[in-house]
Length: 450
Ligand code: 4AD
Ligand code: MG
Image 1 (cartoon, helix red, strand yellow):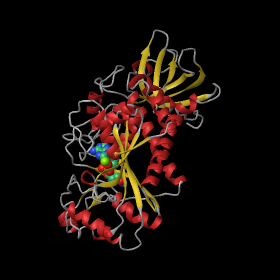
Image 2 (cartoon, protein in one colour):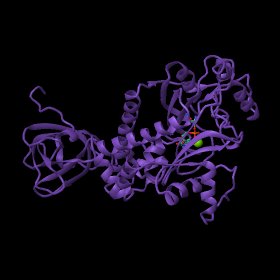
Image 3 (cartoon, protein in one colour):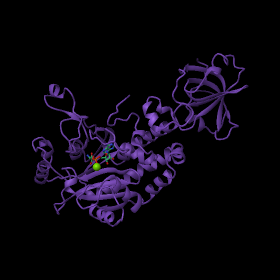
Image 4 (tube, protein in one colour):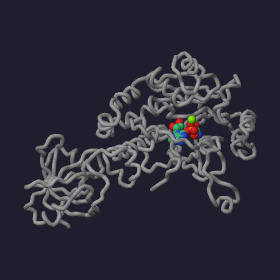
């Protein structure tokens, strides 16, 4: 193989300034069309949205034994000359000199060159990455993850690995998956974490700026297009920071990440714009350019009351905002992302800073069109006496949270942070309707295959 042409990825080939030269490409066939005097093999290697076409002539000595039998789904390695393509829509193609079948397909290959429903594709999640849509989703996830790390790195944040097995309920909401055998193993009950926030707070009160990026688990029985039982969350936490600083950080962050997705994944975004959600690029551009609206919860309630809309859940001060209210605000009333702050204490977690009115807390949710809540965060309660009271009022045990209270006794400072649901971000960025279709292997009530 020493004289074999170098292996190239399709993304790299298509970016070349000119054709010419022998190359080798590996991938899976989207289609194989065998005409009388030529075979056309459409190869995808997942490196970008585009495929590359290899053209193989019956004059190849292995044409009958290899090429003629190729079909959709086959894994191949093709060596050939990179030439300008006469076909429209593609810059280069490969004139094959050697085609090797690396892995054949059984007759019942379920992915044919036609539109499959997303529901159906979920049942074949092991093959779904080979489709246009899921390749694009996975590349957007990657670009978003890198952008997130870059954003925080550029601002002096340290990445924190918070534990997945935990003995405390970070949200105090009791939606945790228990771990069988934990009692025997740890000598106490343990669960899967719902959030890395409390750990992030501990470390932020030493390193000032930290963030987590890890899996979180919620045993809430929410069968919606926006909920997963396992999802990834990004949770920055900043010491010496109050609500206004938090809002600023959040807005900068969302703009930065969306800008990078638009810049780096133009090919995939063009697909989402044409085939999944018309106008999604323009919507994102608008978010990146325009200011976010900022409202207090109390003002949001007034807007909803004055809206003249008939909501399924009627509106009154003190209620938690439902998805229909969030979407009305972001989609219809304001038409862009909205930052809502200062929610009633009763609908939010125990750790949020209590305002002087004793009724509201320094919470912050970011609502975006179509998805609703994409970010939830808050300034934290850093006064030990108030925090203990809030823990007890929430029906939790102050003994269980001894270390969390301790932090308020030893060098406590105002601090704040947020949680971004990674899949909600990807959903918003791509315009995909269902959150199950933006995570490689969704876990939802009644379903955990693969
Ligand atoms: O609003 P949540 O519950 O906030 C927290 O967990 C805080 N500890 C965050 C913090 O301040 N550090 O969740 C944060 C975000 C939500 O805004 C939403 O984007 C996402 O996580 N999220 C979910 N995403 C998918 N499926 C679910 N079941 C989700 N629940 C929350
Ligand atoms: Mg929330």
